[in-house]
Amino acid sequence: MGNDTTATDFAAIGRLLTNTADRLRINAPAFRSPPRIPGVQRSVTRNRDNTVTVAVTVRNRPLLAVVSDMIDGVVLASGTQGPTAADVYNELWSAAQQWLGSPPGTDRTPHLSVAA
Image 1: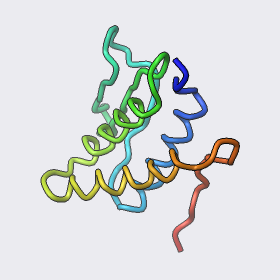
Image 2: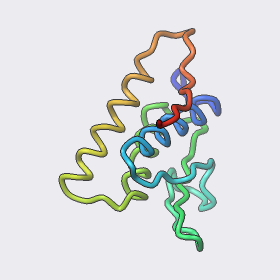
Image 3: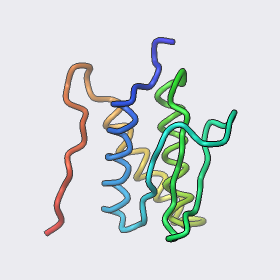
């Protein structure tokens, strides 16, 4: 497949979504790959310390499918519902769209921003 996701893409979009969640003041999950459950493409686990881990299958999957699973995981981890969840989805997809639309060969690595 020509649009397979790389480990670098997975890490970069994870940072981007985490930065966006921080900006929205919602709890971002940890991301890992692959899921521990055989045969699933995404799993969401609430850990003993009340953090959330989203595990996504990356290998042999289109980038957009991986991004979609990661965004779903952020919204699930945040616990938002209804109109608030819709706003969170829109903000996350807007950030992802900007990253996905950057020209090939440019640095798509999201850089950490520091709040004043």
